[in-house]
Amino acid sequence: MQKIRTAVFPVAGLGTRFLPATKASPKEMLPVVDKPLIQYAVEEALDAGIEQMIFITSSSKRAIEDHFDRNTELENELRSRGKFEMLDMIRHLVPDGVSCIYIRQPEALGLGHAVLCAQPAVGNEPFAVILADDLIDGGEQSCLGQMVDVYAKHEAGVLAVEKVERAETSKYGIVSPKPMYERVSGLTGIVEKPAPDKAPSELAVVGRYILNPDIFEHLQTIPKGAGGEIQLTDAIAEQIKHDSTVLAYEFNGKRFDCGSKLGYLKATTEFALQHPNLREAFHSYLEALCKGKFCK
Ligand code: UTP
Image (cartoon, rainbow, N blue to C red; front, side, top):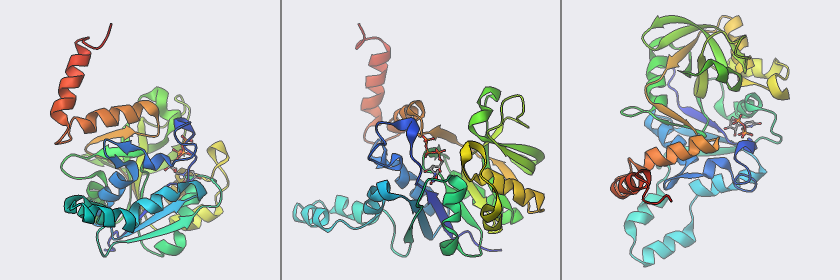
């Protein structure tokens, strides 16, 4: 079995749902409590055994490269102030031995196009895709870690899915599942953003994928799809038509759509309530707020 060594992080989207915050700053750099979204995504990849991180970026996303790079001025300052714990933390956001590769997507032509930009660095092996704006609290095991275990059993593509309201299907890729065993289904089809009355199920694909490399052949040939973009979903539909096995996995955990303002607020609240240094004070604050102490 080929190990999943590589994760692709498409971060070249425009982030229009979060304007004006995302006008000049990448949405993936929005902090949830004290870490940017992209760092949670990289930590999830590390937890799943990934050794090579490929970021698909654009001209307005330089802060992401800077975040994972050395900052010698800050390091020197922390050292001179004796703040060695902080120094160690900022120097090891990505452990030694794990490589970061940055590839520019020249134009925001869609998620499928962004993934295709990674082909020269991925090569001919299975790989993961993580959309950092879907923040997933997997509890004991990260969502991608769970998916790598499913991949190890079947050596097939694995898509993270969750049940959504039927009225919401037009926001997601929706799968046609053929249940196999607990949490795992085979796929007989997948469709991007179907209207509620056309959706084949209520199982929506969220921002975690394990893909076999034949996806690149299909990404090169599919026409533009929903929204005039090259859609990853359409290339996965082609994989299925060409007998490549793709599975849907109903992951354990909770997803926050941090590309939307409400999802981001929910994530911030719940992660703050888990943060060892903040949870007590934040809990008391919320409790008081709910009792109306701060409301007129
Ligand atoms: P979204 O559909 O969330 O689009 O993209 P977006 O532009 O980031 O945000 P909104 O909808 O305008 O608010 C899903 C993922 O695909 C990446 C995004 O960065 C996000 O992680 N993406 C999308 C690209 O890398 N390139 C693209 O051309 C499109």
